[in-house]
Image (cartoon, rainbow, N blue to C red):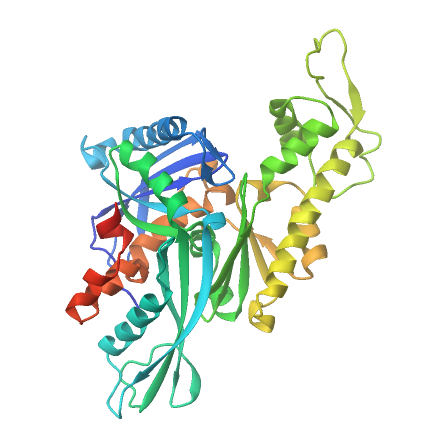
Length: 422
């Protein structure tokens, strides 16, 4: 089902709230296909957020405001001084669950219409609702028409019975409400939510990867999320509560240095794979509480790599276990695309290929033209993907589906976070 993009000239804004940074992109739609250009960019080290969870409302709110203000300032000519009002935000993978449903619809020999498809989607949503989880995505991944599977768009086909295969993503209400509170206190309205790993995939995958089967592994500061795409849709999502910040704290502990120094050493000298020169290359590690000028502390680079590599191996092993447990089997495909700030360590691709036994490449935002060099890498894939989501996939929002499903009381009956809760 293809969604009609937003009209040309519309302004979009994405807010990506992560454990290590908060990023805001403001964009304008420039054509009738939903293509957009980014006009404003702001990013800020995130405070008050740990492992994808808000732990200090005021600190998180301040970081959000700084990122948004920087993007508004850069896009000032286009938004003509009006403050930003509406944003699409990310849902950290750690607060989301993936569910697959099959819904049978009797078509009784007629041709399949939009209404039949909406009925199936609305029915799946009603089945999935619970008090402590909110619906985030409703994605039709395929249809079976009179026993024949693999149908992507059944509209116009004549059939007796149709089964819709639907992937629902739900989010943990408490955690999402805390994120929403920070944003609303910054005087912004949330118009849509999108799972981080889904956004990263929308930004960085080419169409063949989405069709043939590909796994996106979005390696953030506190969370590593994964999303499996096949047949053009996201069919599964999961996450593990380990990310780049865990690597940094391993380095700080192992070399008895500060977190700031550990982050710097990881970025400058770190690698996911050992090399032959590591033993002979010495690096200077400042010791906690000591004056670096008095007591320089030189250690071989191999010591640093020896701390980093096991933690990254563990992340890939955990991802592999989640994929094995998903029951998707061969649908997962042979391709892996790495995104997120923590994916930028040298040698990570080779390590991923070794542990996952798949072809691995580094992903960057492909669908956004003319991004400045500083924000065109894997760390900003999710931010860019949020714009693609709101521009091209807004029909997957549960509220949009419920608003269009015909039984009048259905929308009233279902407590959708967009309208009623917040």
